Image (cartoon, rainbow, N blue to C red; front, side):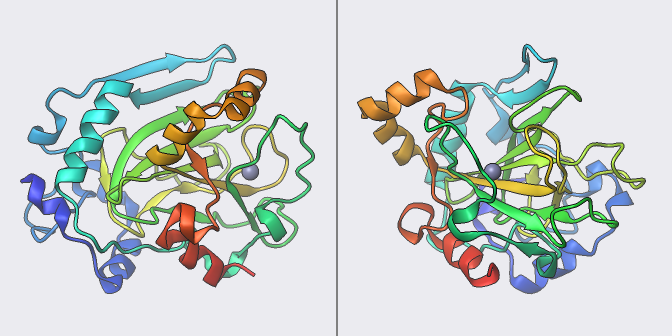
Length: 273
Ligand SMILES: [Zn+2]
């Protein structure tokens, strides 16, 4: 598998087909990139991309386990992507069952937070009333990319709960918080390992209510390096970040702003009412 293979982006038809490939195929047969979709199937980054990358496991004080690339590895990975990306990317809405999704003005709902707790992501709720859906609602990759972190939360864990981060081939990071637990539904939940490559439209997990929420919804975050660079220089941001574990320096942008979040903002705005 060559690095050039991630240059290709999928057609909508391909993404549609991908979303219907049964998950039972198994992890080693699930990842498809570029032209050699059905001949070469891998589940980890190609060796030339993996070289020098280091995964780490972090256990937070509430017992949640985070599997991720360390910060140096992320810089390396992003630099490799930069050398190797096309200018045109394809995006899709991060929920497969779009008709089950809605949001509120400003992207969040009943979000009563202290002033130092910024809410930077977009909350995508499920109908009706954000109660547990009878059938799981599938979170899908909004763009081709690479899984860079997974959090497996304990029952008592708060804030983001179960979460996955995807480094898109556009260089942005996409986060999916409050994902369902293994015990929420009888069928197994599609979760990928760090280092796995996913195609646009491919399942990442199910909408859940883990973490600091009682509502079943996806907290969808978009992060950019340029936003992070600005925040690091901004004394107001720094002060807030020190006060709040939630608004830590992450480079989060408004997912509904075309200027900040790029093309995904158009996709979100088109689907959500
Ligand atoms: Zn949220």
